[in-house]
Length: 304
Image 1: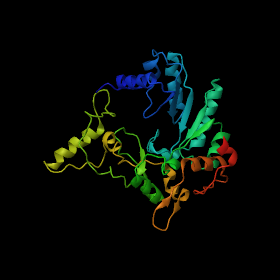
Image 2 (image 1 turned 30 degrees about the vertical axis):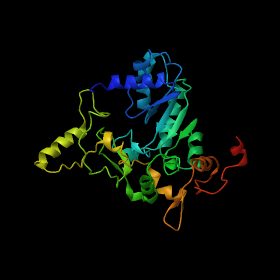
Image 3 (image 1 turned 90 degrees about the vertical axis):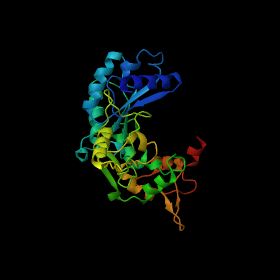
């Protein structure tokens, strides 16, 4: 409690103690993270990656991490069409992933740094992936397409909400206590659903002084309620509501997920498997989407 750096250090070192192969640092990148764990015996063995949304953020991190004598093993460049928290201000729509990717790749080349770049956020088709690789990426990171697969651990009602979503159902709001814009379905049940702050149990978003904007919003709403039911609308308790699957974060193109599944006559959906989604990324062209069909992968891929 009230010690975010110490908590991060314990969690990272526990992961390395447990034999983890790699860690991707995100969710509000801590510039001093490498220095927190540089004394761990596996510090140079574990693959460490970072997520950034600009060359500026990358430059700051590389400058700081140089003091630990170690560069990241890979860099995920996350654009403004990603789900969840965005590394941009409310003017997120003024940016695009490919431009940022090209800027990051050019910066690394100019610095003589051979660090793989991975594009993320809005890579919805195989063609999108190819375009990112042609822009200089070594790989792409994708999530939205896999959220409705049977292998995904999201509850069925959340998958259904994604499949029924239309473009107007997806919004970028400022309800996160972090102060960053956040993309989610506007029908997320956490919105307008007040829960008491549960920082004693979780406390993920407490700053070094023990503050959280949801706690502040809860306090103001309690004063207004006059002892009655408390309603908090301007912020949500991410610590609790994310654990309850009540915050339906999603990528910009979540409304296209219905194109990836087949609607049955009884109102249910034939969902694509994770393998089918993966194969669609490998073989689709011209930004096409292929709903699930038997044997959509090539025999050679299946044999491999």
